[in-house]
Length: 75
Image (cartoon, rainbow, N blue to C red; front, side, top):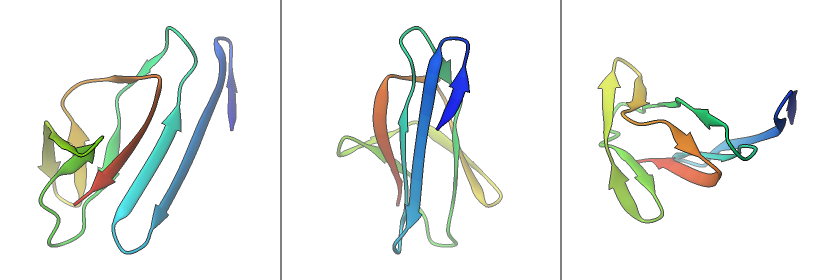
């Protein structure tokens, strides 16, 4: 957990075998995120749907900022 002037940010992640990132942002706060991309990774999933992300080397960079509480998966 990380304290900010707007409230705490919670981040949890695991790699088992795909990368999963869970984040909770305080109200009114958005973040630009990127995730590790394995060699055969084909995209990023949010709530069962592929979201727009660009692969740059070994990272997936999300096209849009995120808000609230969510879990992203690299596939």
